[in-house]
Amino acid sequence: DIVVTQSPLSLPVTPGESASISCRSSQSLLRSNGYNYLDWYLQKPGQSPQLLIYLASNRASGVPDRFSGSGSGTDFTLKITKVEAEDVGVYYCMQGLQPPYTFGQGTKLEIK
Amino acid sequence: QVQLVQSGGGLVEPGGSLRLSCAASGFIFGDYYMSWIRQAPGKGLEWVSCISSTSSYTKYEDSVKGRFTISRDNAKNLLYLQMNSLRAEDTAVYYCAKGLEYLAYWGQGTLVTVSS
Image 1 (cartoon, one colour):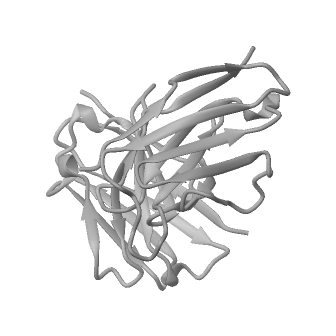
Image 2 (cartoon, rainbow over the protein chains, first blue to last red; image 1 turned 90 degrees about the horizontal axis):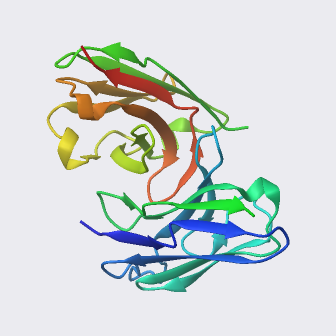
Image 3 (tube, each protein chain N blue to C red; image 1 turned 60 degrees about the vertical axis):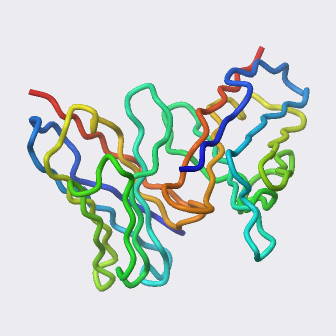
């Protein structure tokens, strides 16, 4: 199984500042079609998870451009610029390359 | 708009069975893979199972293989998860989701509690 590791697990951020979350996989998530099968989700308190970024760098519909994804192979980053209070929650990365699809442990973003 | 409305959770004794349902609307259900994901209380997300658009392909996480069965009825726009031989460690909120390699829409979740 592919192991996905996130860091940090806790991320206190001052409103208006930027934040980054790292996700590393135990094997390359790059498929021969050129796509990296890594997604980012946000689970706000008391809600179902929502898709933020798919295939490493594509913003899902309705996601503000403050959110961006980058990386390739085994190293990926989610960056949030100008963090707002509504961004609090737990962020998860997930590898979609092969089953069993696996999630990172989650990064809890809180506002300072 | 896409909606996934779940039903069927509840309290069940160890060894018991439960069937979860997920009613889809707002998209052509029969064109898409569907997935189930669960979240134990206070824990992270765990992928459980997926099914292809025509039901020809299914996959399961190892701990549920042989006990859980995913299925779908494209005529009724319904996704199911039949859970047998339930264990305490299956206690979780179960989510259905549209998609496979990325999960674009999620249901509201349904709590399954396995306890005597």
